[in-house]
Length: 589
Image (cartoon, rainbow, N blue to C red; front, side, top):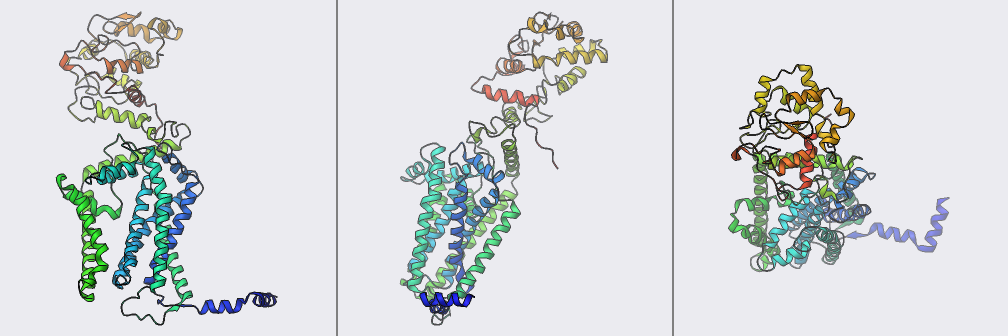
């Protein structure tokens, strides 16, 4: 049945003759595995274009939406994490293949006249592959991409004369934001791919025109069937793709750090593996010689690589080849050693490990918040995801502003002269304080605040009565801001509370609650709405007020924090953190 159809096709098209001619078609180059590097590079570029197109269907290029859209790709879009992982690691593989292509060309002497442009185009393709990787690195708008890109563009901005203009052109102004994302996105999806495609086409055209030089010692006369080339190219591509997929599966896709936060200058940014040597150079050179590390040495390396095809015009061809190989080996050895040193220094740096742990915790927290239906990415954008998280921001503000005197769970940053703030305003904190006010957790480390210690020595409250006082005072933090003391006390559940008379008798002799007790026996802070947002805010803004701790000697008083030092939003984060009002981290499995 198929033969009549085949005969009919052959009669109309000459398909048998064309197929036989195609199967017999031979090339001048031998079908060797080393010759598959270029075709595999081209195939990976096609894979990059295809996966990049798929990612563009869900990616939103702006500083407020980029991180959230990448999170959606990773965690909500079907196979999104896999597609993004293949896109990321295939891009890394292109950089490796670009380097291997140049090494193969060097070894097989495919840079000698008249093939200089093959070498130069190979260098340009490598640089374009690196540029594609670097521009794509910023697009998730996470901490890693933001800070590494900022460091790199700042280095470029340090170049004399042209540097600041180039930096402003790339960044889109003086600030890193929407224009930065859109410009990097345009370069990544349009400009660089077009340039790479043009250079790749030119490389293929030159290879066909010049019948690319074979490896040393191989004749060019016999050649191989194109089917042999195609088969080996296919096998090599499948092997490389299998390695890429294996890495993607092993690592669960490409990493996504916490959203970019320009205010967090302690992020331990590190460059990709192919720039680790340059990062180590920056460590070695003093700041006044930074241009040597960032401009002079890299510029000299690039110049030397571009000049390699011209060496045989100055030296005998054999000597030029030996010298070219020696230069490249020296460069690779030096880069490898510097990269190893960069990793070794980080491995021995306790500060780096601590910063890395904090960054990992912030990443996990951001992803947990964004994926939780009760939280999600705020309307202001992903940058505010952690800024509006009491656990992250509230703790951070406490550590930065308060732990010079206070402690948090027994840990501080200086000598403890104030109470432990862990769970301040909670029933747990209140119970502990009334049972043992002399503890350093409460007032034991506060100079001039011995009143509660003296009360404890003279108090006749029985354990049950103490619990009733705790029950009563534990209501203070929940007093609405719009209620006056009289309005609150007039409520039946408050007026009938068994802890009210006990509070009046034991606490009201020192503390003041308008309409209930006037204090006077000993100086003490006012307790109405104690532990609430408004009580804590007044304590933070005006700790020396008469209804707070103004009775202490000035040297023992807490310094005030104005709105310029601690914003109202940050203060809200602190209060919510102390009260445990935040999405609780998932329990470890």
